[in-house]
Image 1: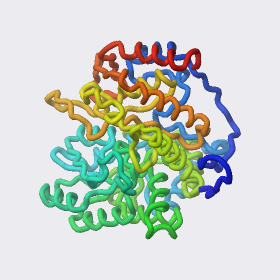
Image 2 (image 1 turned 180 degrees about the vertical axis):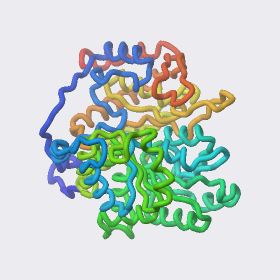
Image 3 (image 1 turned 90 degrees about the vertical axis):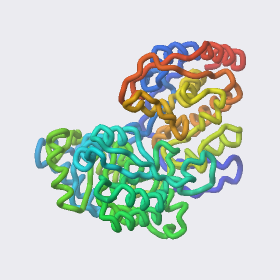
Length: 482
């Protein structure tokens, strides 16, 4: 991380990279944006990327690769079995995690499928600091149940608590005692808890989780997809870890885990994923599912070119300058929005800036999806595409009852090394304008609701003509500007 004090001007993040390849963007006008949002069924996932100015939907698979990653793709060994590319990747994972065994998968949710099919049985329970959408779906589909045991501070929107992703240790112990250790499929710890604002856990808390797991003889599984952000925050916020290197922190977290799985679309900035363990029995138990669902054991559904890029990307994850870039840009955006009165999740976490939709749109009830409505309103106002992380991202139970989410967040992801500071300032400006005109924004209702993972491809309509009125106010305030 660049520790640079500016003699004149604002306190702004300093990028420790230069841009060498660019991609042209376009910014449709406000009338076109309204049309595109209608065509997409008011679901930002269904927008065409050509119609998006800033794609802040996710950091998954859209992080910028380095020059070294692009160069590495040229030496890929394109063979079905026994590829040298796989050997290089496996060796790199051994080096950074210290784990002997690696099972490749085409992405993180594929690893979740293997874990769930192997360890989750009907009636079993998976305690975790907080769930992720695909994780929960895989567990439920295999007859299991998710129990979220994040600390109370994790569900406070505004806070200065540094590790809101921590597990509530007394609740974890009480849950295992109540359910019985034999019913616990495994304990899952998510680095950089996605659905509550990219909030990290501390290394000390992870040690305490492992102590409980050892006490009861249950497995600890680490979802390391957002590990890079969590490593940065431990280094920055945990006093006992300030003198540890990123490599030392990574090895210690791996030592505390029985199994690590990850999406390389986030960790390593390439498309792929996998499962690591140092336990041969666990490896053998999962191994047979890889060729069944993914591909042979030395590629697992991944392109060898992506695997070469992943190998380099994993090494770059050990560079503090690299892993700090996302968090410092996010912190800048969060602080600027907070200064302007926009309700945001604090402290700034990883992955992206998270806007509190219930605070932004207090007049929109949760069953009209305030976070989803805010996502559509922001696109109309700016061409910025974010992602709803709230009730719309839940799914109905077997009785058709819709659970209301703990939080209603609009996530504005910050892919690594993608946006310039001027683009971030543009997004801040349009969010500020929208907040000034928030009373216009109304809710949404489903017109096409899939049963599983409905937020990916469901379609909705606005509950009134609020979108047309928002466009009219935009034109009145900003004239012919885009």
